[in-house]
Image (cartoon, rainbow, N blue to C red; front, top):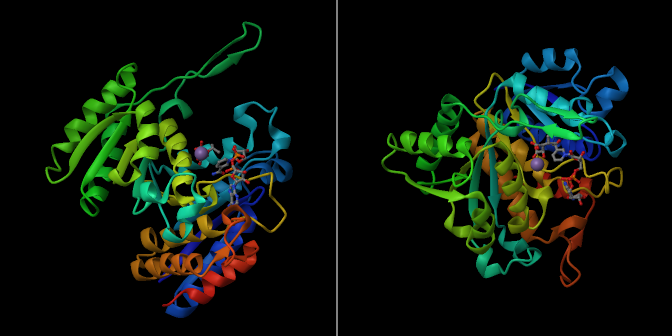
Length: 358
Ligand code: NAD
Ligand code: IPM
Ligand code: MN
């Protein structure tokens, strides 16, 4: 199996965790005789500094020639006063749009060894296995017009979805649900927003093609609560861009750390893989970032771009194993857990590499 991967490490802890994801991919490639080649490309703050743009033309052109793109994180506090269109995050949004992937898969799982890391009681989170399908190319993020008139002291963003945009992402959610527990929860704000009324109508229509899948609709405000009260009751959660951004971070609480959550974006020219977390400026450069979100993201590369399901599952099992063995980066360490082995980013990754059974 040959795979050419664009490596967009980005800012802050992005390069630190991406490096560990690559170590895992290399171990899988070496064992299976696969050839994974990497092209290091600049995006985000490092690209603004070096090239004057958060997404240099060369990065985009090279990524479009790859089979998959693996992104670390973008964002740096020094750009906080920049307008959205010039910030590091604009580079990420542009590459998402150019690659064209609209279905962002964000699994949220409760790991048994981390049950006491969550502020939620173990009996509430135990067995939780949610797959968010976040629409990634529409809604407020990309809607036009958008502006901030500083003289008029007025700003404007637009939430817009077409029927086709909703239908294509809904289709992916139902297909994924068919392979899981056959339930889709579609999240909207249909009691207030026309966009959500369209969303609900289109999702209901698409559901007719999947009679084996149960569809329920939830309003986003109460959904935020249900996710914390009864997380186990959800299977696939389908939602628009901003609601999905917020709810998927919220589910970091179920897992115990945002640093554990992976994602894959499908449906475009090149699949884009990125952990859910950001550049974490508060811990960048210290060697303490949790690499497991990035490593689980590498597992999604193996599953969705390399067709190596067995290897993907082996990486996920290795993550389970190191957690069971007590390996803990700072974000998942606990004062009341005597048996834990407190580890750095690199040590956690090494433990995973040692635990992968291929
Ligand atoms: P963040 O995800 O960077 O950090 C939130 C908190 O979680 C911080 O306390 C951080 O230390 C912790 N955290 C995150 N990842 C971790 C990891 N792997 N290991 C241990 N702890 C981890 O979110 P933020 O602070 O709101 O944003 C910081 C910057 O990142 C902003 O510029 C934001 O726009 C950007 N961002 C980028 C992406 C991306 O590139 N995909 C995603 C989210 C945020
Ligand atoms: C994410 C991030 C991004 C988003 C930002 C950095 C543009 O928060 O991937 O969740 O809002 O989509
Ligand atoms: Mn986010």
